[in-house]
Length: 510
Image 1 (cartoon, one colour):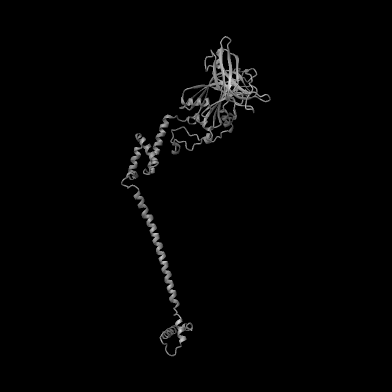
Image 2 (cartoon, rainbow, N blue to C red):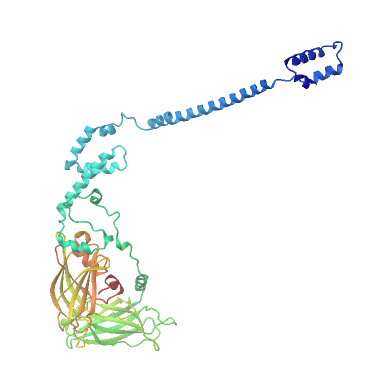
């Protein structure tokens, strides 16, 4: 009922309010029913919709204002922390500006000009070098000053190198043209000013071909086999002046390796007096022993004057009845007068060197090396050869020497001597010259080949030897000695060896 009346307007609302107040009076006035008054008491007073909506809108607006205010306060605090707190803390941690006036002084243009003038003074070079070293770790010196100091030091270094190293020569252009591209051969002409990157005396970024070469597994296996112990052998030497005979006495061997399945060997020894291999003598075979005692004498007729050019070659074998004899090792005595003058018997102990086949004596070659750094000129003088291997049916050879200049496995140049007919001991005394810049001496090597000339057919290789920074044994030592004593000829005898796989790879057109 009240809902229907409430729709009538403001007057109905006022009437209902008055009626409700009368009902709340005790007792109720006449004409009002008790039940009607109770219904008015239970009915709550209605509020106008407009007032409720207005209160809700005010509450929402207040919440939005509060949230925006909190966000603005947070943003303000963050900016204050970034702009004020952090710089103040860093400034407090660092030293005061008044305590370090170096930065302000160096940043002024006038003082920079004074420093550039002082850089021209050679007496301050040591101090400037120390300053450059310190500048790598100290942030107090500006980058412009550091760069000017470095440029001055590099220019001074360039002048020093110009006074000690030669100017470029047109003779080296052909050598550089043949070099591989990855070698990055730099110019030797220091007269022209180079870019700063090229002036730095550093090897960083330079390609070294030797680092990229793979080591052969066969070579490593051969070295490991060579280090194996093959035992020792005991023999004695004595020269009989009356009969002009060298007496070699094979005494015994000790700690030989086992070659048979039973853990033993059947050893015997072959004896040569090189370079003559036609006269071959050997001991008896001793069955199933690793410590045989031979005690046998062997006579080699040879004049006393020729003993200095002879070598004693002992080869130890294991006898097999139904297969090829296995070689245990060998001993080569280059100097027969190593222990004594051979006037009395002298006992000698030698280690047996590991070998799989008998080494063939191909002869020796003597040549000298001389390098002139100022001109970039390498001179190889072929002096003579001796005891070369006979390649013709006449028992002689027609030898000549071919010298190849190698760089990173490529043959750049080759030169050769004249041909000496029908001899095994030729004498040449011929000079072969190569033009090599000083900075490329560690990249090249020389391959010396002794060839036998044939009028019909191909020329045959008697033997080769190699000298260079990457050579082995005497070849490397001879090269290093030449570099250690420039402008001085260094001569040595070199033994010739067979053309191995390594030589073929280094020079496939031999």
